[in-house]
Image (cartoon, rainbow, N blue to C red; front, side):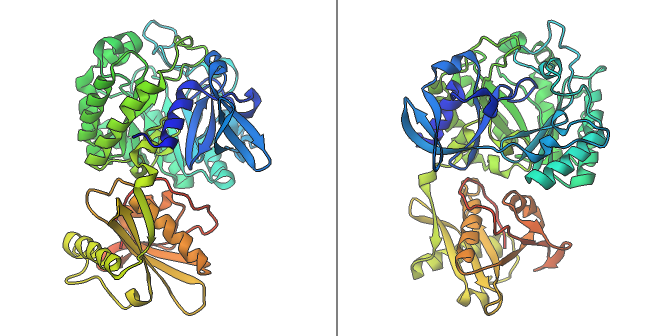
Length: 519
């Protein structure tokens, strides 16, 4: 059964929402042009706003004293929020270029830009039919080439003013081909040096696979190598150059990228609405997931001015066939949007897939209410920290268990994860978190993120003004996604490198989805 929120997101992404143009619209570019961003149930959602078909959508917004409400056929569905205009849009770089021409806000916390706003195939028959990369140039909304210094300046301002947490860099195809990889590497290096933000880049499969290491060395964290369609004939019609490259080279590039960047840090856009059957998309996604590649399944978003501007998005019913099956495979293989360090997958705004990964009603989190629940929590901790990670020889229990609060995450009334919080002193407002553990098989279910968020919420109820935890090095990025900040350098803790981190106690608590293991 499709969760109600996921069903609503699916419908608005195919049908659009009636919104005044000046409120949300942007045009042009290679990304989600002709769209506005809403926040629905904690998820950022990019929706069509001004294409002709939107006038027939049953969805619209209504302003009330308490805020905005999404309507369907004039019936209130749920409260939503718009994403405020970013402060960095009103800034300029040192050379006087408006920052809004350098990069844009995607979703709620993603800074995105096409570093090279041209494509060598744009004025040829080989141009991708769905792309609109040079349209924003025609509208004078951007510049042809963003320099590394301009990008670094803009990223610094966006991070300071708008709490940007990750960056997406795209380009058109350069001339000669593959020069875009050097352009992306140079740009990523400048941004990483100035901000430390996680960075995602997108590019065509190179002939020289070793160039992927060039991106990694420059500071790139995740990559997108987009196939768009698994059907060779459809790809030949929609994206001739990609068809010429061939699936074999794509597969070799994905495999090499997973080897360098890790599973779940490599993705491929899969567009629904180009003519493929749902079965083809599901089976192709299964193949990608098996390699450790996240299939970012999105409905076709026709861009005004592109060669497909008069094409309609796929019907919501088609998306509701595809999304649950892909989400099921992701869960089975342990991949999740919430494990991605940066990029379109982490942003999630262009797809309803994140809302399908974890139905809201299947996870609960609360303090252990019975001795039996506490014993189950301690058993999970033992299996993770003693048997699996071997951080402790016999037991991970200590003196802090007696004064701690033990939170449990439950799936269908079964305890699947736990975390412990306890006061560091007497009445000083400092609390410590730790022993975050989730059973195998549920580490892409959202339980890890839910436990961390609930831990933050509960210590605030006890008057906490400073909440810290020692985080294993592999899980720093996960906590950064939840707003936690590093304090000092890495240090050994139980014989392994850990990072002391502190929570942002002023951030709103909400539930989305992810997983991790921590002690």
